Length: 127
Image (cartoon, rainbow, N blue to C red; front, side, top):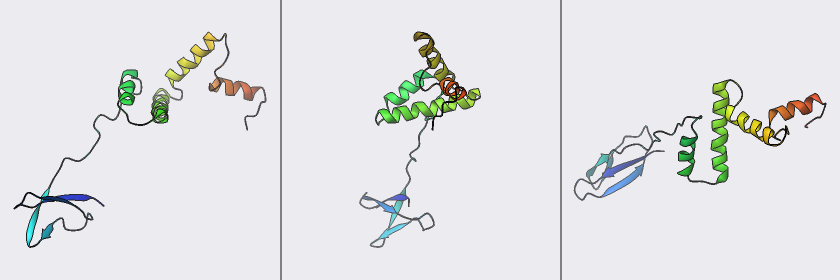
């Protein structure tokens, strides 16, 4: 249920009251009608970042509270957005897999979908 703030017009005392949305939003104590105080709602402005911008990702995760796993979750979400935008595969992830393979004389990255398709073509089951 939402919290509403009221101020005593005589003493400048304020109080927060939990009220239902359908209840009348008024507070009367000792015959004094307290004035309702309106505040700016809490909302996140600029929380959407460009999934292709590494600078925005660094700014978001640098100021973010949390742990390593939270940052990795944010990274995964952006990867999924890039894959949706480009039609199936994240180009940043593909570039990292290709660089891995080039540095290791053609060895495929363990998480690369190419490896999975290679294994299935050889008849190896991953179950």
